[in-house]
Length: 452
Image (cartoon, rainbow, N blue to C red; front, top):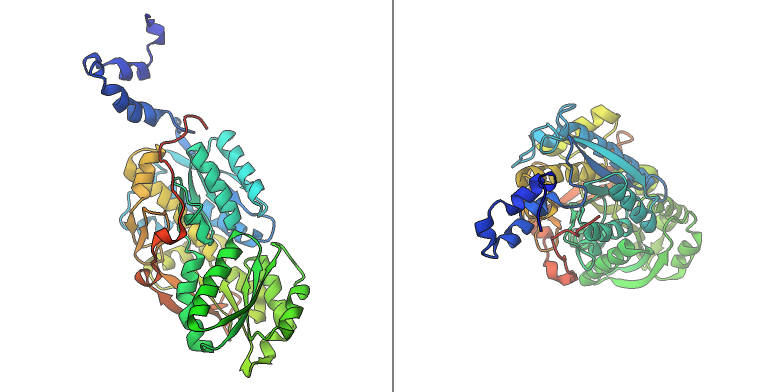
């Protein structure tokens, strides 16, 4: 077969230019996995811009978290493009970021409202990959969304930098090579919160769980049950509630005669903003049970939720991934940048969204390519600091960030509308570490699919 000059493309020259080596039978593998492979992957950005896909719950039970994430993503992209004060680009260590985009390409974005629904999130991510050419997908405030999109991105060969997702399954049984999580998980909430609950409320307690009926709620309930039963607490009941419920009276009434003296609300976002005040209105916080003062616990809580729950949040314990009032250089820098841009402190959802964007960009810069397998290598086992969570490791075995975890409590005497949570304990990275094998799962291959 002959090849016309017209058909002799640059790529063909690369493939055929070393005839002697090709004759050995070794070169085809080298070139397929090297120069050829790195030019042929889903949405390889060949122009002077690169597109990130933001998959955000702008409606639904977690919409407030999604709106704050969007602000943070836009701020991160502005900083990557050299706009504004640079935020955490100057604080991240080590760093390859230069403030001139990613590999010299200006960063743009497209977005999709996931509606806090897994199927909608997957459909939106598909559109952004196939229609808009997104090279990376990020976002979500629901573990159901995160797991659905993470699976899609594995199929498409597109890296997914998860937003707010707290289910053990995200980096456990449902982990994927193309998915990375900065946010901590439900098991780590149990590790951090259990000892504090024992110290505050004693080891002889009877707990009643109300649990959001999806992957996050299930693993949060499991993790807190394990932590509290290890203290000696008895689990009286665990009742599932639909995501997006507004009236919890039918779930709260049975607690009154259950023999429980602690209510654990495995709820997040608007679910918790509704359920916690209703529990207080039912008189649970003011009642005595088993000779003890009744208590309410919210294992995962954000500043946005605490603000929404108002007075009901006062004195209630939970855990958080990050808090805007931390005094390390990274937290100070991010809070300053976000506050100047939007007039309010950032939430933990905003923080993890911002950090994930920078970490992806930094990995691409360190890899020197957008080719996903090389970016994955740059992220796996990468250790960094300066992002507000202390020394952090992107663990290679499960793509879970290992870092400090915060135990927080609703402020009894807030001084402003933003002064709603106090950090009562910071559990360091070593204290929050666990064996990645306990949750099972397989990461899968790094080689991308041949087509999007």
